[in-house]
Amino acid sequence: MNKAISVSTLNVQIKSLLETTFIQVYVEGEISNLTYHNSGHIYFSIKDESSTLSCVMFKGNTKYLKFQLENGQKVVINGNITVYAPRGNYQLLCNKIEPSGQGALAFAFEQLKNKLEAKGYFDGNYKQPLPKYPKKIALVTSPTGAAIEDMKKVANHRWPLVEFILVPTLVQGEGAAFDIANSIKYADKLHCDIMIVGRGGGSIEDLWAFNEEIVAIAIHEARTPIISAVGHEVDYMISDFVADIRAATPSNAVEIALPDINEHRMYLDSLSNEYINRLKNILFNKQQELSNMKRLFEQNSIETKFNYIQTEINLLKSSFKTDLSQKILSSLNELNLLKNSMKNSFSAIFVKSQNQIDLLKSNFELNHPDKKDKNGFVQISKDNKIISLSDLSIGDEIDLQTPKYIASCILKEIKKQ
Image (cartoon, rainbow, N blue to C red; front, side, top):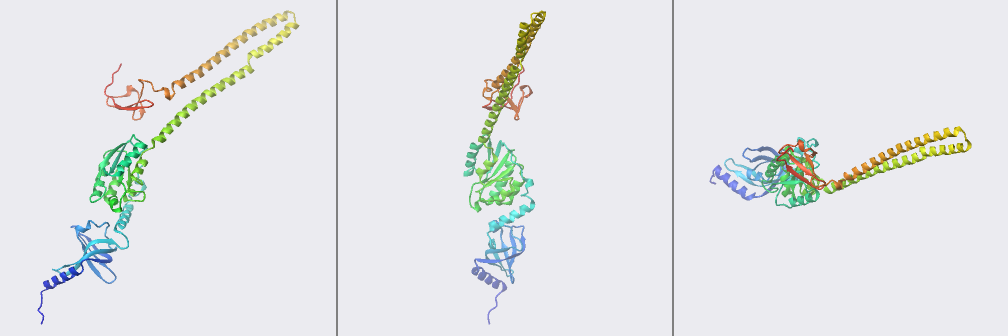
């Protein structure tokens, strides 16, 4: 007769047999009875049409889990069989869990995307417009990556007046998502006009920090308009959907944020040309108007009419040698006086008109943009508005401006002469 063994001995033997036989197994099934324990461990079962298997994933392995487990999900588990000897229970100790039929990262991306979309994080009502002429931009990115240099080059070429504030940030690896979220919160307190959050290209694992919920929440809650610029044009992150603007690359983000200085130079040139052409047209029209008046006067002048009358009178004088001729001569003298008076009046009118034209020409030349730059004369402006020196106070920030230069100053003293 065989010698009996204790329950504990049998359980230990079963444990040794199972744990050495099923060292690494892959099991596919549907999740049920899911429990996220306060300790950080995850307890659940997987089942198929006929059987159920208890599973556990300890806290040390849960940090590698990229998606949220849910009841009813079909998954593939990599793990080993373990036995809890005191109770004689065996379970599957999970080392890695993947969604059945697709990668964990892709599934996690869609899972978080759907969650945030349902909360309204992608709603256009939350999107803020970008200012047209930003003065200060916060860059939440790595200080050592190529992206920061690319953004600086684009800014120097496009709009060198802007000021960049770099917020050094860990953009990949463990703890990157937490660091990005904290950097966004810090940059939001700097009162910048725009914030650019991103990094250069890399693998999906390298870029994954921008797909974390903590980063999405930080972007959504920020008051500063944010441009998400992660990876290359084909890379779409959760941050792209939550941000106010999505840029294909970090360089593209700077192009979106800044105006083109060359376009503004051409626009100013066109304004100058339009101003000059309009003044030339005004002067030309005045000259034409004066010429037309002179021609009309010559055609209908009193002198012409007097000459006609003079001719008639001469005919009468030669025909009549009576007292009537004396009266005609008297009338002729009166007409001559009237003629001279009218001529003098019209001459005065023409002189006045010519003086007005000369004054217009003089004002045009004096106010030409190329002649405004005089030594010792500047235009004073405050908050982009022209202001008189008498309206300023000590401590005011003002700009002293000529057509070619702008000097920013702080007023230290005012003396009245």
